[in-house]
Picture 1 (cartoon, rainbow, N blue to C red):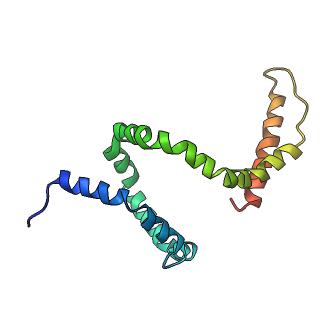
Picture 2: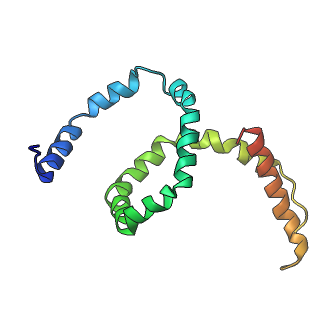
Picture 3: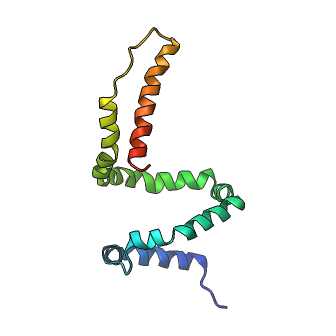
Length: 141
């Protein structure tokens, strides 16, 4: 088989993908199948794939294959630039997701603080933990 060399394949991939932003947006905006319905319908396949991956230790193998150098390169070259914009774009979702926990913390009455290193101070930790667990469960988490 006559196959182009990897540098030509990579160059074409980068060039064509860079120009595909409008196609990406159109596909996301007008999907052939609703994302939620299709993803929910695939739950059994997800379970089977994750179970098979666990049995074959694929997670650790993938981590070893990628290595720290690849992780750091991706984080520096892509993550640093994308992180602030991603956080800003998700601010509303963050606020909506955290609000029930913020409200639970605000309404939690803590036992009195005791002397430093007093084991009784653990009751304060327990009160916060209990509030967070109840909130998470009430949110279906």
